[in-house]
Length: 183
Image (cartoon, rainbow, N blue to C red; front, side, top):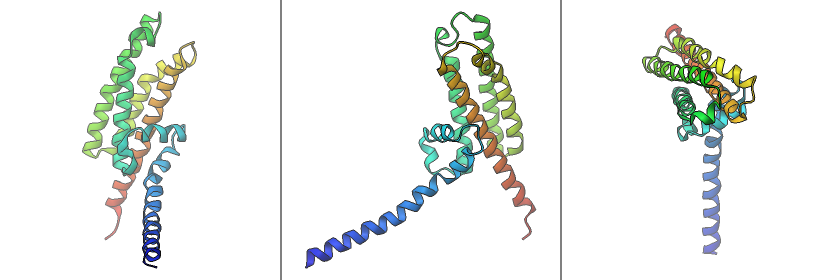
């Protein structure tokens, strides 16, 4: 009889624990799903963002910072990949894209400063500059025989830039509405 009550209390404890964990697990990615639904590829966005362990319980500010970091890393990987792997036989294109991606990295550093300063409105403008810098490379990739991996890198970079823009708009809207609320 004692073992029956012990088993029941253990079962009740487990059920209670799952009731507490289940909703919090589903809730932790709700904000990420909302943000990613506003990008060019929701599923790829979620996959990219979840590649950073900080994303599992990040708020909108955390997701913004993660997206900036991931975009910077993605651009850095692109610049630091072996020349032959990136642009076989296309030296002028290689130097042009290297410069564009290095400029994008610099612009993303500026974006992070704007983020830390709370200047959310200017982040979207800055990210548009970042995307413009690499658009020429993306267009050349799309219209050539470059590997699908290069095309994927560009798409992932574009998705991360979209995340930064969506998050910054949300942060700007939240900060603006906090100033206009009546006590």
